[in-house]
Image (cartoon, rainbow, N blue to C red; front, top):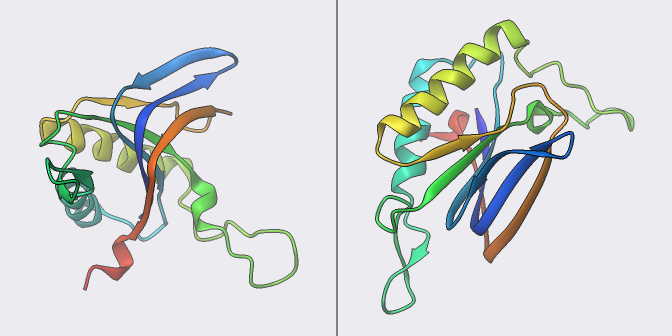
Length: 149
């Protein structure tokens, strides 16, 4: 799994002009699921995500997690994170999981994040979505579960 994580002041995801999910201070997580991803990847990434200390404490140091600030998380599926651009100019998405594999893992990921006490909003898997956000910092991280060690 690849996650692009952005610290935001607020964010929303819309489908056909209708807001599907909206958060205030917290994280926007673009999540890409690969064919080989499994429940171990979900567990590791959810723990990492909710405990990342990327919010400022009283001294202005990045010392607080999204849980600590009582923030929210907006999770949006994005298979294009697994694009290969090695050959030619047209990306290949051969590593991205097919919907029959990706949807259950995406739903499990969303469920596990919310079970850790952080309010979660989502987009809609496979939909054409528009994301509106105010990146705070900016702080943007990329986490790949294939690089756990």
